[in-house]
Image 1 (tube, rainbow, N blue to C red):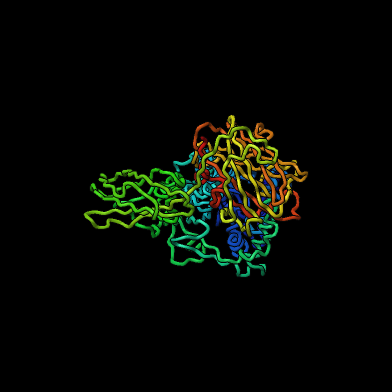
Image 2 (cartoon, rainbow, N blue to C red):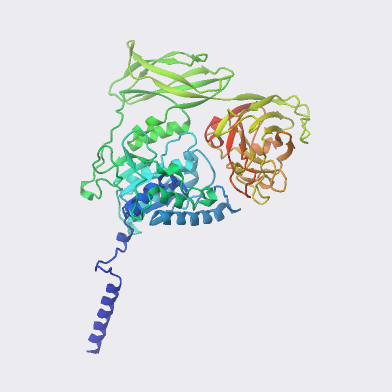
Length: 638
């Protein structure tokens, strides 16, 4: 009897415990897998990447009481810091804290990290995934998806457009592949057999930012349950990213704009002009079928220019993912060296079941020459053939132009013409100096080197008022296995807001960046020499640090034999640098990639470490050019 009484007491205790965790309505709260069930999962590269979607996240999390979660590839430890001197992993700790404060305001319930390294600014997806390990990173993301079981994935566009961070491209690519991989029992099977997870098929995948195709528009100005609109809440939330300079985002009017999302994949029926990312959801597993989206049907015979490697790989990837229509927004883009000759390559792909013969006709821009202008090709079924021509780029050309190619069959057009953008990059010869320059702020030793201008019209980013606001002249020379650089910067308000113990992130202040690519046209900067020079720190001393290259860090450790001097002038400042060939991996004679970027701030009352970047101009200008050596100019050492 005593034993029976003890059991009864235990039953009573257990019953009381169950009652204590049920809601006032008698419904037990979700637990285990049900606790993690998510409606929308955002996939991003760094903390603050949710900026472009923040009003939408608030719209669903707070306005519709949906479960929203975000996953980040990195903790942003490779970024800048406007509120302190933390860098590397220490900065990652700060940025995670800022992010969690931000997401708390937005109503985002779960925040996960894939723990990949934010190693540098690069525009190369290929370099990013090589550094991270693509399969390992994809597996970690699949684990998050199988755990949270989101209905919808929203992510960043992986297209390699100029200025698009390679980490951002990688987040979009990984999310796209994880959409299918999470539902595949053959992918990452240990998660199923050893971790107790089950496969999960998200229902929809969207890229943020719109574009062509099926778009969903989310209005950000409608008042939510707390009276405030989604855009107002987003501004308050994003202001927590203070280390990234977002402290004044509250009330930003651009957050009022409707937010566009392009539907990439869907497992449920879709309608025209949807205004809800969750439309047609939830849906049972038994009814899920991949819905064919409207896309350009494949031509029987396709003609394309080969472009930058990143663009060519992107086209192949979209084809493999069955989303080739998204690649239509990214055209062929070919850097060409001014005053030089180079090969142009085209491909003909035969998608038909019969061999085809085509005459390809090329048309160069006025003043340019392409040889030959016509090429005959025969292509077997299902095969691709490459065609090559030689392009002569006129001296002095500075603006983009287009080269056109079309196919004919029996004298009639056989398909629409294709056009590639020709992007001219400047070119110069570096003279051998008779003696080593003095490096004393004078032109001693540089007199025989030709002067080259960087004008306000050479704009990379921002706005320049006139020559006095920001412009430069530079001279290059080499002597005794050393490259010498003299840069005369015109800047009517030189600012020195960088502390001596904070020598990194040269883009935050007035500075000069010297970019050298020993391979002459590399896809990424990880084998390059990129030196950011502060003309003066807060104690008036010239300082330099390598950034996002083969050996980043202050030059005292990363380039100990590089010498840098700086002098104030009546119109700004002059920087002179001696770079040993060995530290930049240069050999003589050779052709190398080269660029000079001038950063201007103009905020006289800038606080220590504050990012005051107002404008960037460059010898070879283009958005994001600091991370894309293909678009740097070329130098010949003679």
